[in-house]
Image 1 (cartoon, rainbow, N blue to C red):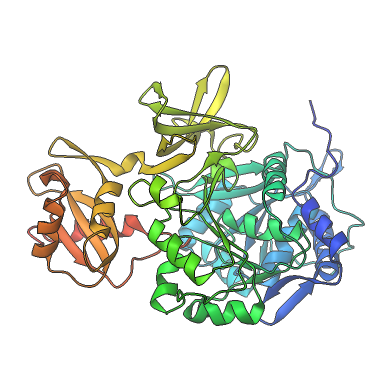
Image 2: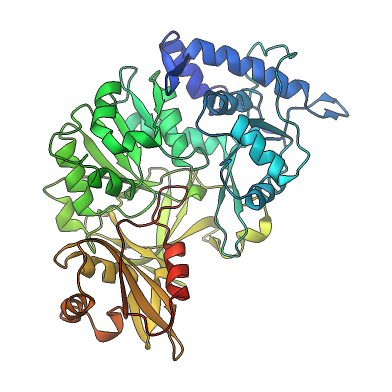
Length: 509
């Protein structure tokens, strides 16, 4: 049965709402280049027409392109290209042009991309893949009169996440899932045309959808954040009069080092959002002091559940008391969803792996083989297994405990790496900590600690940790770093730290 398109439920409809509210106001700004809502709408219609003009012919006439890759840096080409693909009824596949060519080739192939929208950097990246894919050229195309209608079950975009096999996993997300998500956000937040949104994360990161479509659904401008802005973020925010900020928690460490978190430094912010990894109470408190007029939310959610599925509003008075291991709670699961906690195969009332079912869930991975172990059939419904361990607090909110794979066995002792990190952060002079494992000389695993802040003698750290942790939980190796390496999504790159730890010679301390 073919699903009938439902007016107003496509992701692009949010831009049309913004167009009606703010036709002559800026929709997107990249450095000193801007596009108004009207100009971006016209450009997207023209490029959407070009996409449909080059679509393969079917037995019943032209069909819309199936999947369109946007292989570009943060540029007007990228933003207008994403909207054009949506206008044409296609599925967007946002890709990072700075990824290794082999990884890009795999993603383009897995997504069965028919057309690529690319800026000069993206064209060079495509050439390195040696794939013969056409790059959009809209010069001779007639513009569409209006965007193509879509059904809620149609796929709006495909994002790729890391796979345990080393092969990226494609995650398709529907227009209906996004409609539920953004409708909920509309009720939760008071965004309006006078707000100024940042666009901080990579376009291949699902949180970019939050930044773009929250803004465009309210007729507000979005400003791409250049890397250099983080060196003096308060000055940049003041100059742009920015009101809505979004970043990963790890993004705050560089801002702090540059002196950007002094009290009252960011007075224009009304909302500050953090997602993608654990938010420490210490970082939330420092950000609140620097942005005293901002409400702060800690958001949580895997790509498979449409950007974020829970949220906790930070309170300097109550949040620290409810934190576990110094991590801000992640809040309650969005309305319209059910969740359960699994301890092994048994449902737990208190603590376990978070499983969620509801309208924000992906229909399944591009490669059905990747579904194995990630979905659960229970009570006649399909649930997504997040792989994250959480604890249910007395008021029903959830506290994040860590990934299932961060619970390791050391000398037969069950060790939570997040607990080790928490105790290390309480040591004098330490700013932040990331504990990883490596093979031990005699077999099994041993702990390696990376930390930022002041350099502390390993003997001092070991003695202080031994006063609070059982011996198997005390790291064997200590490494001071100026800052943690970040991956392309600005999260702490624990995989890189683990590889470095494994490469250290035996006997390193």
